[in-house]
Image (cartoon, rainbow, N blue to C red; front, side):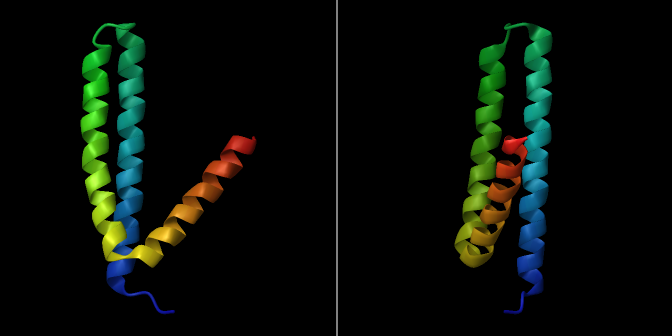
Amino acid sequence: MKQTHSEDVDFETIAADVAKLRADLERLTDQLKQRGGAGVTQAISEAAGRAGELEEVVEGVVKAHPLTSVVVAAAIGLVAGTMLRR
């Protein structure tokens, strides 16, 4: 099955979005550690807002390219499973 350029771009977009979300979560975790509990509600609200935005983006990509999305999800599951075994 031949992939089109748009599928490649969508996969790259998903990977970039996931990397961005990961960086955001790391930053928020660092902020929580620095604050020592103060402002936790605000940090949680920020994280929830960003997660909602990412959810909308991912939902659109999944609807547009369901087969590619399944392959990406399987790859993420494989990587996560490998990391959790260690």
